[in-house]
Amino acid sequence: MIRLLLTLALLLPAWLLRAQNITLSQAGSSQYAIVIPKLATDLERKAAKELQVYFAKVTDVTLPVTSESKGKEEIHIGNTDLAKGIRGKIALKDDGYAIVSSGKAIFIKGNGKGTLYGVYSFLDKYLDVQMLAPGCWNIVKKKSITIPAGINLVENPAFILRDVFNSIAYDPVYTDWQKLTHAVGDQGMWGMFYHTFFKLVPPDSYLKSHPEYFSLIGKQRLPQQLCLSNKEVQAKVIDALRQNIKAGKGQKYWFVGQEDMGGFCECPSCNALYQQYGGLSGALVFFINKIASAFPDKIIGTYAYHGTLAPPQNIRPSQNVLICYAPIEAYREKAYVDQEDRTFVNYLKQWSQLCKHLMVWDYPENYTNYVEPYPTFSTFKSNISFFKKNGVQYVYEESVIKNGINLNELKTYLLSKLLWNPDLDQDQLIRDFCNKYYGEAGTFVLKFCTALDQNRKRENDKLRFWGGTKAYLNPSYLEQYDNILAEAADKVKRNPVLTARVNQLRFSVDYCLLNAAKSNGSSRAAKGSAATGSRLEQRRARFRETAQKEHIVDFNSNGSWIPVETFLKTIP
Ligand SMILES: [Zn+2]
Image 1 (cartoon, protein in one colour):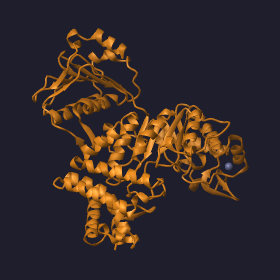
Image 2 (cartoon, protein in one colour; image 1 turned 90 degrees about the horizontal axis):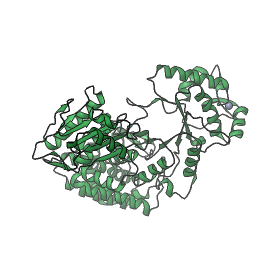
Image 3 (tube, protein in one colour; image 1 turned 180 degrees about the vertical axis):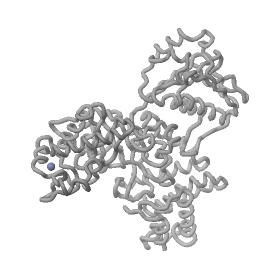
Image 4 (spheres, rainbow, N blue to C red; image 1 turned 120 degrees about the vertical axis):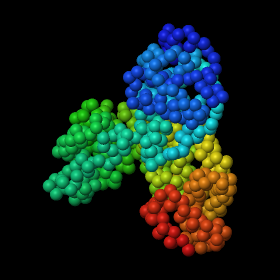
C-alpha cells in the first residue's frame, strides 16, 4: 500500500492530497460527482448506478455520473484516467477491491466483480446500507455524511467459490450484494456439477451392451457406480466430457462425480487398485487423474464422500484435479476443531496436503426436518476459518431450499459474510442482523437464538444432516421459544412487514408444537395451553397463513415431503 500511495502522490494534483475529513453530503446537498471511465465496462456502469441509487436513498441527493473528471470532489469508479495510477500496484485477487482516498478524491476499483463489490462495501461501511435478504435493505436516512480521510482499504475474498445453496442466496441481486459466487445456476462456475458418472456413461445406453462398465456387486453388474479400472469406461468418460465441454460456455470447472450411493465395483482389477492405493478413494483418484490428463486446461472435480472420504495412499490427485471433501456424516453441534473425534478434521488436513484444489461441501442444515429449528450458526465462523487455514479454496454450503423457515435469512447472511471474510466478528454480525432485520423484535429474536443454542448444549444434543437428537425441542423448551417469539410478535404487531418476519420464525416453533399435539397425548405441550384449545387453533391458522404468504406448499418432515395441508389434517 505504501507503493500505491507513492504512486498516487506522484500522479494527483496537490489540492487532492491534503488530509481532512471528507464531507460527502451536508444538509441535503453534495459537491460530489461519480466519475466513470470514458470507455466504462458494463460492470463499472452498474457499480456507478448502484452507488448513485443508494446514496440517494440515504441522503435524497442524486449525484451526477460523468466520465469527465473536473478535478473536484469525486468518487472514481473503476479504471478512470486518474485511477490508472493505481493499476497493478495493489495485490488484488479475482473479485478483490481497493477503496482508497487521496484528499477529497475517492477511488473504488477491483478485479473481476471487485469494482461492484467495492461500491457495496463503501455503502455498507460509510453509509450503513446493507442488503439483509432478497428485497430487504437496511437504509437509514441521513442529511449529512462526513467520513474520515485517509481511506486505505484493500480486500480479497477468502475463497474462490463462496456458495450458499438456497433460494435466498441464489437471488441474483443478493448474490452480488453478498459477494457470493455460485457453482450452478445462471452465474454458475461449473460446466457439470453434482453426481455426474451416469450423465457421462448412462446405464440406459450401456448397461445392456456393456454391463462391465458398471459395478460388479457379488456376481452381478449393477448400475450403482462405474467400474473405475476399466479402460473403456475411462475413454467413454473422456469422450462424453469432451462433448459436454464443447457444448458448454467455456467453463473451467467440470465435475466427474460418483453417484449418490455406495456400490463401488468389486471386480478383481478394481480390488487391485483399492489394495495398491489404500482404498476406494485411491481407485477414484487413479481414475480421475486419467480423465484430467485429457483436459489439461480444465479443472476436473470429484468427491471425497461416503466411501471415498478417507484420503488415499501412494497416489495424489493431479495438478488439475479438484477434490470436493463432503463429510455428510460429520458432527454439527460443535465446530470441527472442537470435536473429540478427530476423524473429519484429520481427513481434511490430509487431503489438504495431497491436492492443489480443495473444496468443502458443507452441511449446515438438517435434511430430516427442514422446518425444525436447527442451531448450527454458532459453528459457522470456526468452521469456515478452519477451512481457510487448511488451504480450502472453494466452499459450497448446502442450505435449506425454501425461504421463510428455520432462521434461514440469518444463517444465509452469516454464511455469506464469513465466506468473504472469516475474520469478521460473528456475534456482532448476528446482533446487527437481528436488530436491523427484525427491528424492535430483534432483541427477542436474539434471545430465541441464544435459548436454542443454550438448550442444545444443556441437553448435549447431536446435530446431524440426517437424524441426530433433539431434546432441545422438548415441550418445555418449545414453550420457552413460543413465549419469546410471542413477545417478539407483540413488539412489532403494528408493523405488518416485521410481523411477517417474526411469523416465519414462529412457523418453525408452531410446527414442533403442532407435531407435539398430534404425536404425544401425554406430553406437556399436548396437555398444556401451548398446543391445545384456542391456542392450538390460532397456531394452526398462523401456520397455514405463513405457509401461504411464504409460498411454502410442502416441506421435509421426518425424512419425507409432506404438503402443508396434509400435515395440518393430521393435527387433532
Ligand atoms: Zn471394476
